[in-house]
Length: 121
View 1 (cartoon, one colour):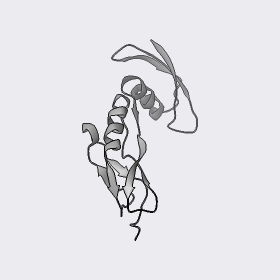
View 2 (tube, one colour):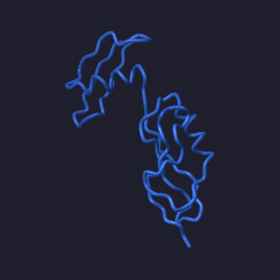
View 3 (cartoon, one colour):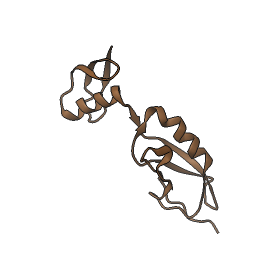
View 4 (spheres, helix red, strand yellow):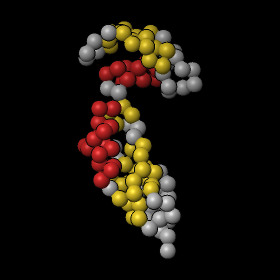
């Protein structure tokens, strides 16, 4: 199979042409740095994404708290991660970077708060 991938690791946006089969890269060209080659390889063999969302929060200025994974998770697990995120509710005060779910879905990624929200009196 063949696929063109636009690298997003730097502003160049190189188009990497990849030839691959189910388990390996056969040929790759068009990248201009090692990061581009690594990005294209990962995008073909094991694509990962950051998951961003929000959770309900009690006793805060706003009704929802923005959150995200602290590292990319496998793309095929994104919906499972979101199901877990939908189950939780935070309680103010919450600090930015605070872990809301540790090791979500066994991914070694944590769901963390991306905003500090103080308790409303």
